[in-house]
Length: 462
Image (cartoon, rainbow, N blue to C red; front, side, top):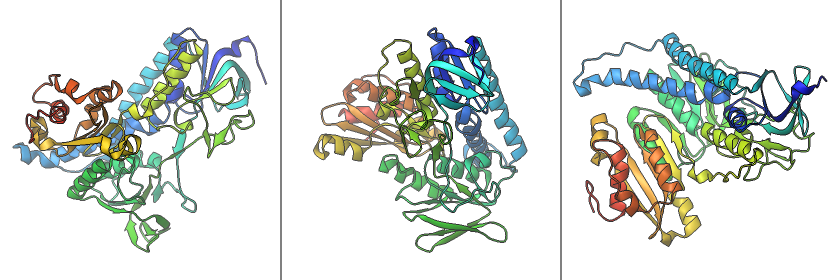
């Protein structure tokens, strides 16, 4: 295996997705000599198969809904259909622009970018394309892929993953979505906007089960109004082909039929056959085990992103990559408070949150020490203008800080920035209440909710 001075670095990063390229950019900024290895495209799942393309589809769906509903606003519009080739052209154009910009950014930082499938060959080296790249430190950032279930074969035609759904050349007349988490409800939302008849199958009792139960119930109510069907609380048993589609059977014997089945039960780590265990890295169910500083048990190896059992979010990958780079450069970064990470599900309506749920707060602080407040968006002028419904729910410690903000409604993802400041700076309701929020904005709903929680409601009842 070739190895010379040109292949010896301070830091070798295996994987060029959100976590890997964030580590590379920050490390190079701090003066480290970095090699970044990626077998597919720089930007990883988020840019090419996740965050960006799904949100482009959802926005196209939003445009379709707006065309249908123009009359509600006194605007004469008609909806003539969805041109999926045009949708993909728009989506791919967004991706291409961001991809080009990211490539230029990596090049400008003088990062050695290596295209090829790498494999960890020792605690301080990665082999790729017949060449060995040695580093004082290695960062593993090989990401994730869509999961399936035993006996459920994803064929890319009738039974598809999110990867296939993103390039589907038609609008399916009907679809079953297996999984009511973030990925499942986002595709269900987009396809419904495009005109599909969608049924979600979720084995747990609620949609978006990782969210506060109140948010789940509000989303379920909104989905019913949109005509999105769902079956909750019963697990999948099997799937079989029909003459022109797929039949899904649940554990209770109930069956559903549709043109396609989208398997959206989450994503699993990419770690098999990459030399991790051979190098002595401790694994758990395919994930690389790390501490609060993203350090593995091997002193020269760190790991970030979907490869480790933290929140599978691009912005978490960014933060973990930055943390590792700063630690290796001799700085003293603060460990990530994962409860303080903003979470957004970009369906219609959106679900956004930061902090802990009411149930988790009661576990942590005791039921008698938890106070909640719900602010209905019906009292918010801008939400009325937009014709969106929903709530903001606040969770606080009695006489203490706000520890959870949970929001449902269109554009709530744009409000979670302030919400994360409220949580992460341990703000008291009275401190937020004294801030002046612009009117009319949806953002002022956060201010009004805190006014109410502080005991001085304005546009809401005592």
